Image (cartoon, rainbow, N blue to C red; front, side, top):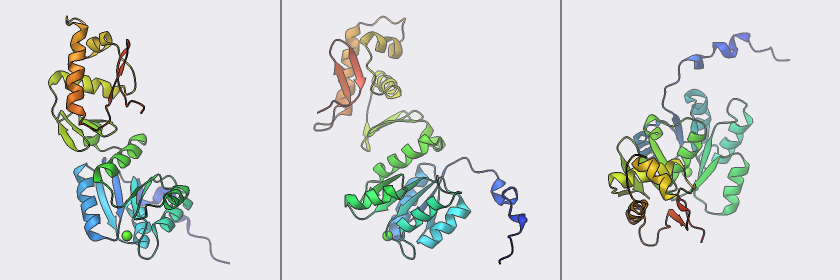
Length: 253
Ligand code: CA
């Protein structure tokens, strides 16, 4: 019979009692070095702290040492596959809730279903757009209250991102130029997506209750906002509800 492990390994004695850095950490598990470098660059730009692992064994080791808030996990890896890493992470009580985004080179539905069944929180298929990947990471970390400071000043609705600090708006990665009223209008809508507001409610919220403006003014600014946001062929994100008002929403087609 094996001797019992020494009690010195009790949880209180482990070095993880040290203060965690404020910014969320992401472990990038990817054996293609150029892709890993590109991911690190983009994640660090968003304010994440990044560590890399180039194979499955190293991934498991770094998960213990680096204690990431999220793992970006390539499926096809040397030594242990991404699926096996995912399985082991889920089996370990210390890491069973660790968010995992799988990166797969295979577009078959079966594979993504397998990844999700094994406990991946989400997946992207190579080649993927960095913007789409960042949006998925953001969505998972927002639910856990672990967004970087730079991201906390952002609002997002579908592919529209509004940055409160720089006062910049982007849709699908392209910059949208808005006048101050359209910016405030969009900011208000993005705080209450899908909700319908009457012209009077919008006047109160965006222009202020004491300012005398015709309700029709709202229509003018909505039209400008729409023109700025939507390119031909893109979904109109502002829904007009007859005799009720407007909502930030996508029309059912
Ligand atoms: Ca790979």
